[in-house]
Image (cartoon, one colour):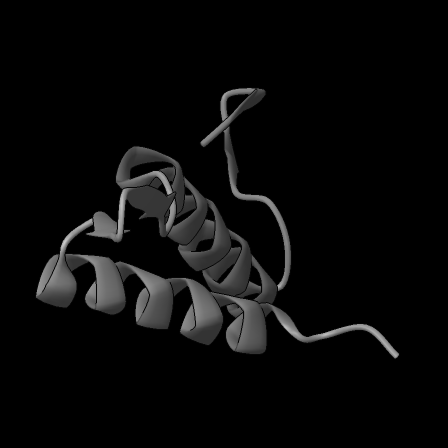
Length: 68
């Protein structure tokens, strides 16, 4: 079963909030762990928001033969 676009967006937004709230990487006893790349998450968030908007509108909008 595939996740919906809305579920994917919610997970991405939670990951962004976790990074913004607690830093992108953590170090403990000489080990460092990176939670995720914030720019990549922002890009994914924008992509999913556009896909959801397109789904709600019912497809791709065209003006003069150029997709918007």
